[in-house]
Length: 155
Image (cartoon, rainbow, N blue to C red; front, side, top):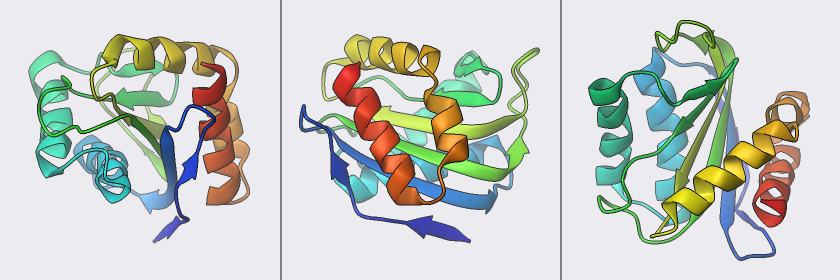
């Protein structure tokens, strides 16, 4: 079961979208769910969803940045049009195979439209500032999207 709300735009014009999902079949399903929110926003296409999964298949679970949090992304070329940020909060965490940060209950995804490293830096700063906890504590997707918008605005 998924709950969604419409996109919220941060001060910088970056669209955001959040979703709550009871369970994902596996890490691939969790990554696809988060990346498809970017497709819903119009900031990426299905090729980017596949690229996010392929990136982990090729390079391993390096996207699991902190305990319980993965940051799904792929190179900017395949299927991204502009910046966007999405998050899926999983009711049942999934394992990515990370030695210390599994299991994951928050899957973030971003499309960069060319500012890939800037978005990674912004997400690192936001996670250090408590973004994952705000997403976990959000009562609804509107509150989660506000947390995402704030993360991009202050990143």
